[in-house]
Length: 166
Image (tube, rainbow, N blue to C red; front, side):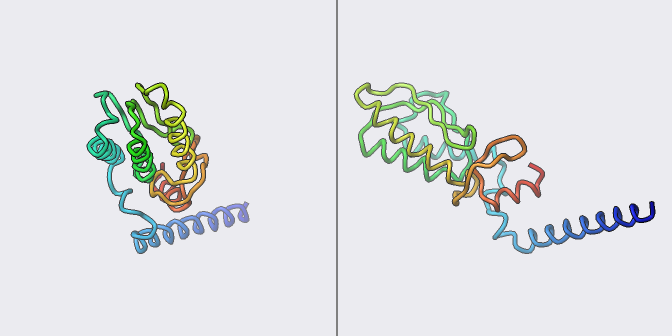
């Protein structure tokens, strides 16, 4: 019984020490481990992304009900996708952009019929790239199961989310 108590006590002390070291490391190395985008509220960040893309590429957002539900790390992928649409003079309407099962999903409304294959090709390229890019910071990543949710997330962002409890 005493051995069990000593083992339990040693494990508890080790856990507390490990937690303290990680906490100090995160505070000391905050810029390295906690990228600036984690400081902002995610809902505000998603609104900012939607507003930026809609103002930069208004020709693709005819619907007042469009929504963009993904994090800042995929912003560059979305910009590249819209630039491809523009370069190819495609006429289409974006209805929704979101993360699903760890990668990007883009839903469109109106498309000129003779350009459907090209639109699908550009969207597929963006979706494939998102499955290798951290949704939070934009660095190289892979799809992981995080507490029952599939996310494309790098190890640093995953560690941050674990420390924050999500």
